[in-house]
Image (tube, rainbow, N blue to C red; front, top):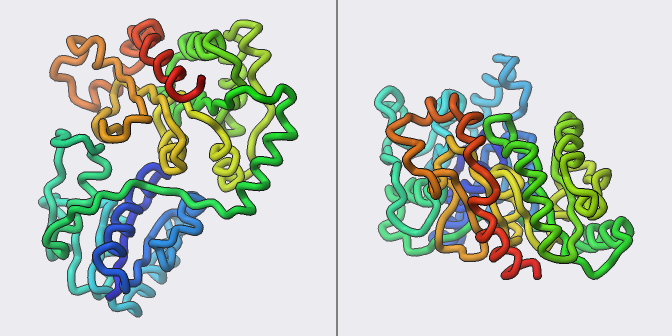
Amino acid sequence: MKFLVIQQKMIGDVLASTVICESIKDHFPQATVHMVANENTLAVLKENPFIDEILIFKNAYRNDKKSFYRFLTSLKNTEYTAVFDAYGKLESNLITLFTSAKRKIGNYKWYTSWIYTDTIRQNKIAKDELPLSITNRLMLLQPIVEKNGFVPFPKIYLSSQELKIASETISKAIEKKGRKLIMISILGSAPHKTYPAKYMARVLDLICESGEVNLLFNYLPQQQQEALAIFEFCAPVTQDRILFDFYATSLRDFLGILSQCDVLIGNEGGAVNMAKALHIPTFCIFSPYINKDGWHGKIQKKHVGVHLKDYYPELFGTMSRKELKKKSHELYEAYKPELFEKVLLDFLINHAA
């Protein structure tokens, strides 16, 4: 039996879809599993024992239709037992269409349902303690698995050599040993997913007031000035704890560094999902327009998520996600650190004391 799992887009989505691969291997131990993923997400899939081959969706395919077509036609050479389209956009619709799979499984949309042999209607509201990102992906297995009692969570696999190098790198960079090491997801992927600079600086001050810690900032090179602005808002004692110029040169190196941290705190996004997949406790600040139930479940007790809606549900009314996104700046203003200060301090006591 041979299966194909399709998941493009961002790192968090790709990690979430690895639960499909692990579930397939659990139910069909001798099966071969292939996965389509964007080339910028490959680092989180490396060494994954539940994926036999990664079919790289190159960035060039979006601008070169001939290259994309050659990729699509190459899929016809492999006879898959089933294809699971976890992405559900035009590119993955076409990938599914071009395969010669007996079963083609995807999420229900009236205008693409003809492509699939089986469609699943996604849950919009969490019905259990699992994040919707996990629940809805496991539902894609229903057409071929009679009863799915096995519930995996995304995992990232690092080699012993990678762990050794990361440990040595951290040891050389930190002057004052013995402090807890905290990774800070200092910025979101966009302004409407980024906690305000002055508020984030106050969060960092609270962390440093709670105990002896060292802080690492996670940000992209092009975000350096934004990260520096937050650094400058921090109290001097906090600034002294931040290793601002310490960063990894590749995503795989970053994963190694992250694996050495005691906890991760900050904006919801890829870094949080990577920390979870490395079994690092997380404290996650959700953007007002993001559905917390989509990415945060209650079953994993060492992961804490806070959302403005937890404190001021009346601010949300019946606004759509699109409307909330437009008002994210205004909503962020009400999202003061004092609201979740006790929750943050309890998290630090439990995981970084």
